[in-house]
Length: 348
Ligand code: PEP
Ligand code: MN
Image 1 (cartoon, rainbow, N blue to C red):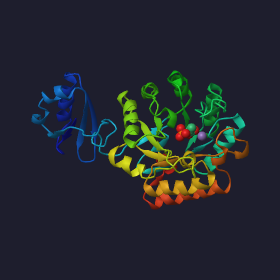
Image 2: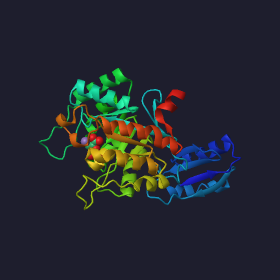
Image 3: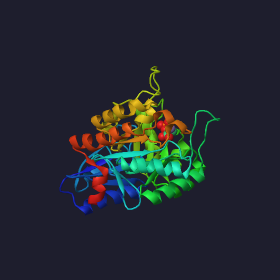
Image 4: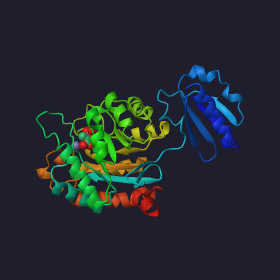
């Protein structure tokens, strides 16, 4: 349920609503918009009805949220959110900026990770990606370096200043991943792993939630709701392609998911053209499409020697493709009214 305050409502009016809701064991999330304050209520709807909130001073309207997800819905929080990553709010991901995230699919060695990070940074990326725990389709494929990989990532953050996003595949590893990383990634294969979603919801770090490869947009938002219900609203959604009948690409990038999600949820949405296509020649065109459709950023694979990569070499960028992507990131989002995330960081 949502309580919409009138434009002239005072702080005391808002506090009175919150106090009433909390008195019956409910949760009240206050969001101050440009013109009015909205209070999202979570808890037993019946008990809220008995409160007669409409009669309180400063209340303009009370209505139910019709979406099945509540905390991540724009009905609950009308303005689109910005999620900040890194110590001291280093990197924004949200509607005003375009965030470029890049790095190796998997952390293999300290040298390879540092080189990939430097390539990413030189191309304009502000956030480093890299997998230490790799959720591979085959149990015989390289599974990642685990905690050793996290230590390498932390060292590379130290060397480059780039905050790190890395995947966690098991609820038992959430604490150690949160200790080393700035943002926790939940991958496509774990989008509906509700125990893991709840654990990352309690980890105190922002979460990058990839869309399940066979998940509808509603199921994806419900997964985000699991994280939000544990008190963590710092969730960034990532469209990474879905399974269709088309074998030409590894997955089919559902580009329309970006504006569909933005219309219904306040959470930022980015695109992973690397895992969508599985082919490096398609990464730049798909990244441009992501910028054009209004995505809040992209996340791409880069590798200093894709031929020798232990994971996803065919989709890793290097050389001319990376330069082409860097140039698109510098020009296109600005032409569409967004600022480069690094520019906003410099301005504070
Ligand atoms: C990844 O980003 O390394 C990854 C495994 O992606 P996805 O979960 O989208 O396959
Ligand atoms: Mn990969």
